[in-house]
Length: 110
Image (cartoon, rainbow, N blue to C red; front, side):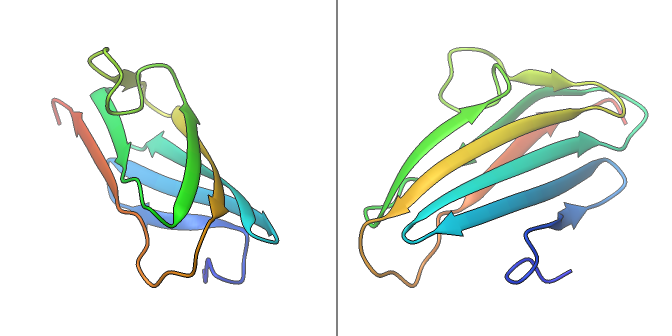
């Protein structure tokens, strides 16, 4: 699906992980929810997400406990057929042509 024109959709999917996104915007403010679903047959352990900060974007990040990189914890565990969730509340402060990068890391025995 085209995530520019359709608010909910799948951003990435393979045999272990599905990354879904839902987004809405009002003026310069946006609310983006990212879902990380475990499609495998083993838990995804030490699951962490890092979203880069940008000068042109003011962003608040909330997520499943241990999910955000920078937390003191080792990450969260995404059990089989469950999801972790990341909420991004952002406001554009200036025009831009580059978007923040998101990095996902985890371990699994698969």
